[in-house]
Length: 346
Image 1: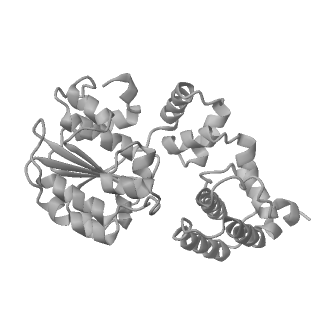
Image 2 (image 1 turned 120 degrees about the vertical axis):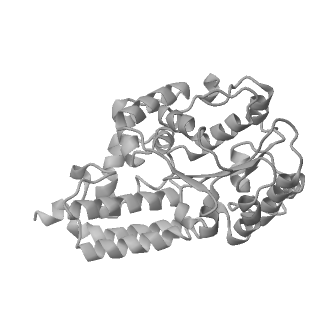
């Protein structure tokens, strides 16, 4: 594979193992940030490659070039329109025209029209090679209608058609989708391996940061390297991250105010998780133990966790971000302010 497509070492190991597997549909599962998309695309490149190796695609042939420039006629990427635009995957002419003319906004879900195009793609004759591939990412963005549209093709593909579905929320998929796939749970890298990869990626992308920042960003990401790299790119500093728990307990939203609501909510969920872990005598996962306020009663934390989980279902809806912040800040302060070590020690 070319240098531009070198996988993280833990993904490369999985790629080489998965290339030995048979079957027409593979479901890559695991939390976000472990490299589902990168591994799924690497599998597609290898399956379509003119001269594949045991390590994956050759990276030099015409087929590999077609995948790289998003023009391979035997590869169909099924994604939400927002993600297709972000990752430079082409949209069909009608969809692109609607978006260009601002008739509607790009969808964050995989639309049924796109799923129907996959069915049409499956019925077409191969343009080159012996394989056609459909890459579905993130698969949890299939709604019920689009998922049902794919079922028959997924169960009984025509010719040598292979599917690779990648998801960070396998529980959200229809059981009928899951049952038609071989499932592979992505492996977690060791912390030392992830930190070494972060250092190389930061240098490659001219992202400033030292060892302490890499460690904090990896902790903030829950050990997920791709998410940790995103934190580094956002400029997250150790003092900022470790200051969040006490600031939130005081009702001070300043350290989070520049982030989008979805990220703010994720941080609150991480804080709630660590407080529950701390209350039960376990090690926190995201924040240093010394940075945490004294946790309230378990029942209070359980209620808060449920509230945050419910809020996550609607966080992408067009509510007022300012009102969301005020509500979340007030709720967190009411739960935690009177329980901080400073207050508790008086």
